[in-house]
Length: 495
Ligand code: GLN
Image (cartoon, rainbow, N blue to C red; front, side, top):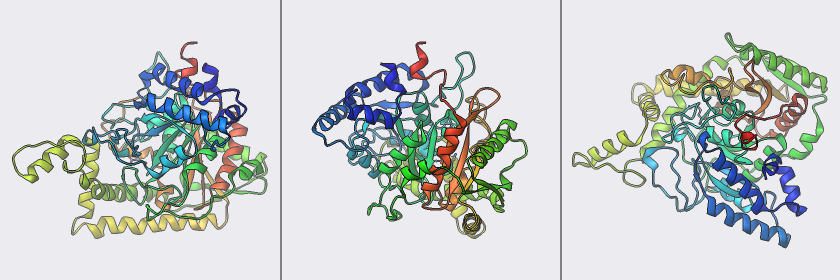
């Protein structure tokens, strides 16, 4: 059965249509794989019975000739997406026991297209973190960890999604990206992670972190699978006031087109001191691949890059402090009665329900928004955000896409950065600007570090030009010949 796990979603879809395999067989293989790789802690809940029911319905539609574009494809869902009747915790104690009475728009769209839900995936608490270590369920583990070495971070916040797709315990997975939470874990685990243009995927029914930055996106093992899943997730939704209805570009043609004649921007500011030399080398290699394929490399400047992280770490906590005010022990999840007054109850519930990192963000955000500090911090950060957006607008006037490293390092061992929020925040240095500017970004696995760990290249494009991004990503995938074969993947665990 383990060879079923090797199929890409595109190939599995064709095999289902050709009646070579059934959705039930495919789903069963993934459920078995998830159990077999349980030690990676990437699922917080396996929805075994629901998965098999959905697979049986898929098989019926396949037989009836009414199959959808994702019919029978097993998908894992980050535990930040509300799933009707299935506990949704955002990996926080405060939401334990919360069973949403509705389904998020993005996951509804996946099920409407025939996808099968495998279960809920681990993530950082309220998506705040870069190593999945703030989860109340403990961290997801990177399947590239060697059996005789330390457990490595899968990245975060969508660590469970990246770990499961790499470990072959999910064929596809949903993620969310506020400052890098899809692209950084994808790079760490050697899979393809894509953050769409802000507004492409509805935020309705996704637990909010920082609403002006949050965006859902796909995790996949190949660029074509990523495009397939994205096409299903995206689309206008009247229930999200920031949803856009500009039509999705033709990704299939883009992926077939090659990059001949394209101009690719190489931002000088992304060459950082102290960066792993393997990453600099891979970045140069990526430029060589694209040049060989007929693209022209153009040095560009994004002068406000250095301000992106400080700006993000004002705006994101400010929005989070406002979004998280709703967890008051009254309407959702855990309530701790102590002291006798309503305020005492709020305080006790929030103190017990939120982990340390979430409390830190709430405090930073509340401070930045308070009278007297608002102008100095929040308003200033908003102005800087505009300058960062302007940098990209100016750059995209002259180039079709931008190529950068995805992360400043490969996956690090779990635990090493836990006590140092600043080094943890530095993980997002290459990914945060895209969220601030609202543009799409994609991390494509392209090579290995000196320790044999995956490294990703990031492709950025102008808002609503995901096609150009996929165009470049496809060439990188082909040229790099990267093959994801982590030691602790399900397909390999018994060999
Ligand atoms: N690592 C970043 C943070 O901790 C980004 C998280 C995200 O994109 N959700 O805020």
